[in-house]
Length: 245
Image 1 (cartoon, rainbow, N blue to C red):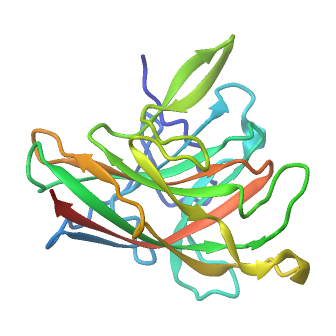
Image 2 (cartoon, rainbow, N blue to C red):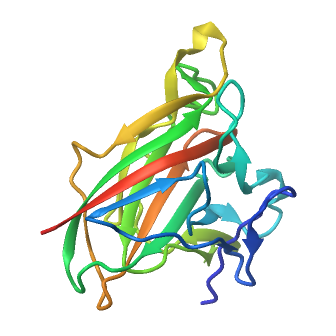
């Protein structure tokens, strides 16, 4: 099967679109002292962007955008990695992925994820299409194979689906866990839809992954949406700690 990313980048995107649909960016340092620190305010740091759970044909209304962009007001003028899409499929998956090297070969690691993102979705905003905060789940994971969106025929419709087991919305899978949701600290009754920073961590969730024969591992940061509407999230920074088991 021909593997494609199925990425549609924004017209102002500063990333380079490869022939396979992936977005290529400059590599940065790998794991140092058991930790990878990613500051998306400075650079893409070697992460690729992609989308899944949408049809190959007639998908322009999904408005899929991936770019390194300035954080929206009232946040500062630093940049972050933005992913945006209109979830018309009731299950849009938006993701970042990157390979890390230098770990021990054929070894199992415990991974601890800490992520900071920017959200404009208050709590308790529920409508016919679900909640823009609570029904958008933030996912993190790792696998030996590169996470990609592959073309799959489903009852005559060709869809982009992930090639790893990331679970389904609120439920994690063998290759990923759910860190929390996209809702920020505001309440919908305030009618305040400004962006604010939100931190999530896997401190209370154990997640392990096995490296390949070369000590490599592919990381994943993503959102899995059950909200029928547009979500634009910004990954600001992330720390992944690796503990060999």
